[in-house]
Amino acid sequence: GGDIYQESRAAWLSAVREYYSLDICKNVLPALEDLPPDREGKIRDLIDEVWGDRPGTLCLDCCCGSGVGTAALRVSGMQTLAYDNDPALLALGLSRGRLAPADTMCIDAREASRYIAPAPLGVIFMAGEIYSYNADLWEPIVTELLALTDEALITVGTEPEAALVEGWCTGQGRDARVFENRRDPIYDRWCCVARRA
Image (cartoon, rainbow, N blue to C red; front, top):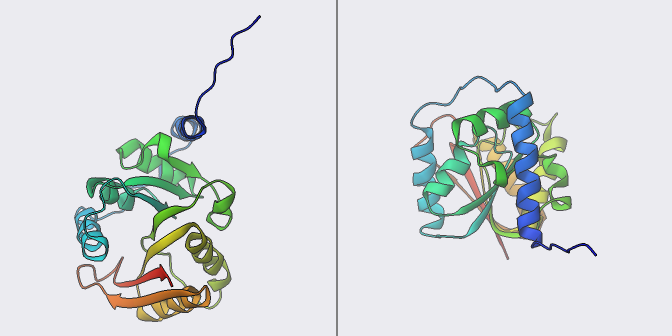
């Protein structure tokens, strides 16, 4: 004799993400703010250079940290889905409003396809520091993002890191190009854009 209530899967997923994001806000001490105030603007300029005007397009922000890339993507008119495995950084981004609870997940980026459906675009802004001894951590993160997206933008600090990323992209059958981004001498200096061939 009960009533049946149904909701779309998209609404359910959004509610689940919001529930766990609010739990992070309630129970995790946010990381300290360490972003320069002009970084978001530099990222917006880079997004505009690479993709131009893509209003409403869904973009995955892999390894989003405290969400500066997500904030820049939203200002550029895109929809975002952000994920990282550091709850303290996510707590910072959520508390500052850069990350939206319904569009944020605390997951292992190497397993993203377990939780996320494919999307047109994806980004990794400032992919850590990639060395030979930790490349086996970063390679599956990059290849998982490539598997989920038609086109990805990945930024790193140095040219050798960009060459590694480019090799991983071409190894996945992507057309990849690397270029220097002179807007930012530290965080997003070298960029790799990878498109489906």
